[in-house]
Image (cartoon, rainbow, N blue to C red; front, side, top):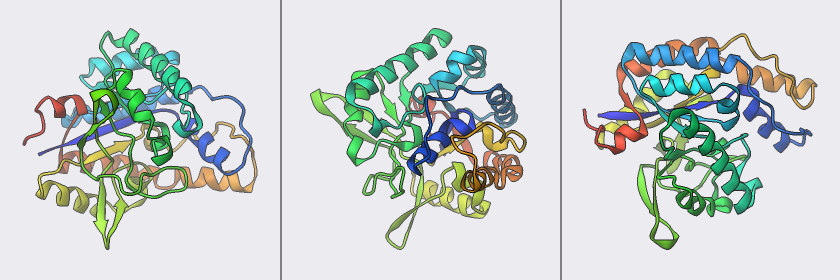
Length: 288
């Protein structure tokens, strides 16, 4: 069985601004990515090539704007180019029209580079939550067919408690629909436990990740997994954050923790399971 691999293409500090703002630190504007996003993404693409794995790459519009050649390299390697929004704005901090404009801008930037329609979306920090569920209608109206924004857990910055755990069709207003692809969780003692990527993958023992994916595949469900290119990078935590103090230094440390182990864990993940993109999976590439 093929599982679904996704990559959130961004620089580490572009999402960190959201965390620090939520903690009360001031931050003006949205930072642009550094050249490290190119180097880290190319390194990850080389790893995928070794294993013949395909992925859906959710690319920030700012990355496409600054480094269009990187987007072309992703598409030329056979991976799906999808949108992560333009500037990593949390969806629930936007109104409908601002969100619609964000999607339109990010789609245009990506489609101009690739010449292909962008059909999949992931919200920055999985920020489609119960209070921003209206965004699903806007996505469908904007030509998005596949969404991977709902994380069926409870966290301070994101989460959709009670959301379904497996890929499923969502009926929306006006007869529209979306295929929702939630990031994978384990069901433990009546609660959803995240293991499907990001910091959860970086910090958790690999055996937990393998057990989680095996349990899903045994019941015929594909895993939905995500990684960030920057999680391979142990050298670049140098960008200025909104405030420099003990708390932000601790935040930098937590962001870097276990990065030196990430590549070996990705190698094991790609070797132990079969992986494909959302586009290929929905087109029938979901069997073994």
